[in-house]
Amino acid sequence: MDIQTDIVNKVAQSGIITVDLAKFKPTGELVEYDIKDNLFHGLILKEKDFRDFIKTHDWAAYTGKHVAITCSSDAIVQTWAYMLLATKLEPFATTVVFGDLDELERILYAKSIAEIDMTAYTDQRVVVKGCGDIKIPESAFVQFSTSLAKVAKSIMYGEPCSTVPVFKRK
Image 1 (spheres, rainbow, N blue to C red):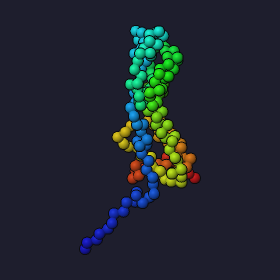
Image 2 (image 1 turned 30 degrees about the horizontal axis):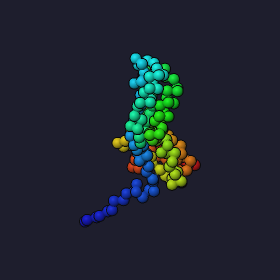
Image 3 (image 1 turned 90 degrees about the vertical axis):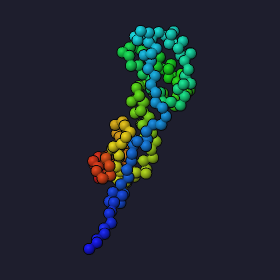
Image 4 (image 1 turned 60 degrees about the vertical axis):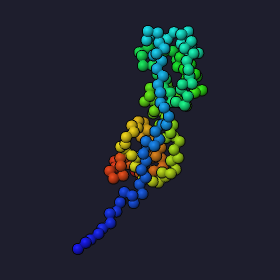
């Protein structure tokens, strides 16, 4: 006797929406400007030398890039120096922030997630994809889930076939 049964994809029929935060990954090159390279003996910032550097440096090299300004040296750098760098980078760079590359990525993810129209998820069951090839900062998951909880019926984490419940509207 030959019995044929159709395989039913219950996940596809569940009406669950899967969101992969990797699709909100910042586009463009992320670079770090480390002011330690401008320090005298790696310890202090000489204002005259720094201002000379500011005048002669090719700031156009940062065109279209996302720039994180930081100081990896254990030196005290006056706030005006970071401000001066920022004003020179601003006409060229797409983004300028204070912090390291991880902080820059967190800020760019936050901006991207803040622009999501959450109405598409109103009263929906949503799975936030957890595994992937692209590293996503935890801050992106936190920001997305707090925004999503305002509109979604439920939030789960993982894959549609294996999820961890995170939120359920009562």
